Image 1 (cartoon, rainbow, N blue to C red):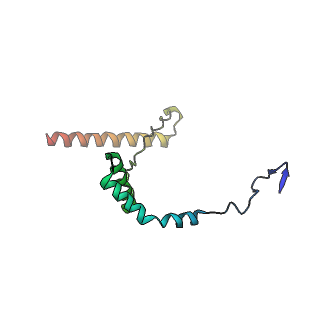
Image 2 (image 1 turned 30 degrees about the vertical axis):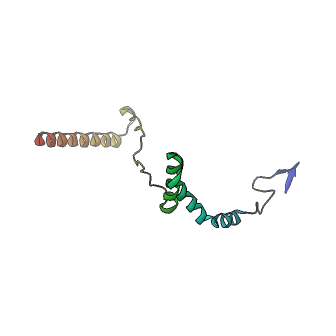
Image 3 (image 1 turned 90 degrees about the vertical axis):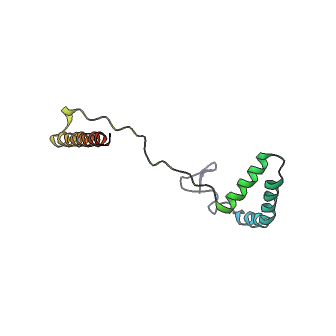
Length: 120
């Protein structure tokens, strides 16, 4: 219901059933031209006046037949680590955890450097 002067209450719509979709009709009509459109693209690919036209037609055909090329996604995050909490504000358990991390990093660095020395 309208509250005043055509303003609707939150969560209410002036058109609750929404706008009727014509997508089905448009898709059906467009699909009737599929063969002709593909033939046109193939003709442009073979006989287009410029390289750009031929390339665009070839890409359009490939995309329709095989889909768009897959895009590589880099899964790494470039988020800087949070600055460490000052040691004065850490509990004993937090200090011990930080020391364990540092010990592990030092141990790994020693292993890596010994592997590099052995390989040389």
